[in-house]
Length: 388
Length: 217
Image 1 (cartoon, rainbow over the protein chains, first blue to last red):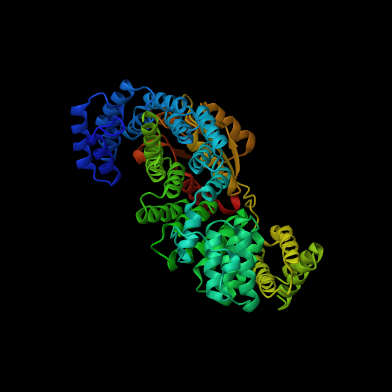
Image 2 (image 1 turned 90 degrees about the vertical axis):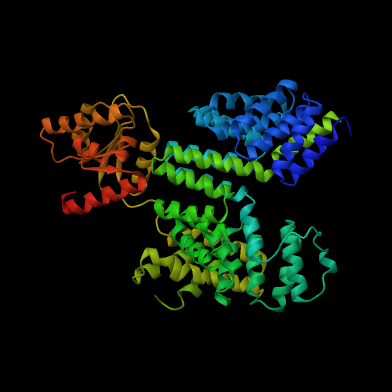
């Protein structure tokens, strides 16, 4: 035993973290043969069953963990997700998310999930309250915002809902990730350099400016951009980055101006095209222009889901729902875990009266969002640390 | 359009002169450029000039910011109107008597309204007589009845009967809801002129009727 846990339990955990589901399940059973009353192993088993879409088994394992230890937060998460994904068990789901919100009151996801369970059970007011609570705890919680946008759509139509979708999209980090992917910048784990230590040449300055922008040090990045533009005001790549920085500081027209200048210099600069589209996207009267730009971007980088999502959102503003649906479907085809596309698709399905399919898309979005953010492991680690 | 109009608009931006900027826009409009083209043909080139001036340091950051504020102030003059123009077409929408489903109706009504149609929303649980009364009151000639249950979908026939009994066979009735989408013959059997399969479908149906009736509106 290490830290009160059997070797088999630790082995199961290690295998599960590496994604080896079947051997991890086997190791869990081994661990339970040694100690059947180990809540953390039951919780882990529940998550593994969930991963394999064995909902009933997941429910049983999670319920057993909670029976052994009513404070076993990861088991509540697995149980709630299993109820949600199984469908038709919304009453139980509401209870579980309530419990989790009580066990870990500042766990934002519990309130988001609670809202979704309320919504699925046709309690729209309670759902909206839960999502507002989530946003009070974390104003950057994109999924709560997406859900509020869908709720607005149901009550007042797309024109009211669309700003909510856009706001949620801005909270969603995937749009910034897309810009940096277009620029060929990836997170290498190294901190951005000190601007004073950067070599006085274009390449070093631009690389450093991107790194600083990635770390959201916009002022330092701007200083380096100015130095590059002093040498060459027609540097389209640098202008595109300048546009991105303006966008991040809510200076939409400034972003539009420098992006238009960049495109006037070179039409083959996807980062500038993106900045221009994103600037248009922020003006409700410019949906047509935004759609045109994002359509061009989607053609330029057809394997990236984000331009299809942005195109779809512009098409929603033009009430071209079928075209928006196609764009969302393409985005999901490219990235099954694209939460923003799934919520958008749910909205389009609602405009077609496809309520069950819309609810399914929201459930899938919830699943991928929860996985992506690693909530189970966060709760698991906190619970394991608490036991030790 | 005068060739230098974008340059003049740019000049108005950097001079922080919204009135001059509006004058340029109005002048270009008077020369025959359509509202829909103003953004692409006038505003965007002026903004590109502004971006270029910022890049070359022909203007400083403060002037750039102030110019962008002026650009923001005149954006509504160069973008297409956000609300569609009034089509003059009045549509009555409501959910059938004994049916309380509201979502589809709300979404469709909002889409039609945004497209410029005059929407009279009668709400849910609407009696057939109420459709008739409101059609008489408002002069509406299109009625969209929503029903999400088989029983209420079948009872839409009472709306048609109510209009027929009062000599209003000219009223166009569209139906919407799961039962009608699943079985198109049901719509025919209740005397509907068509089935709306969602907001976009409703927009298409109304446009089709409007085109067919032409000047009669």
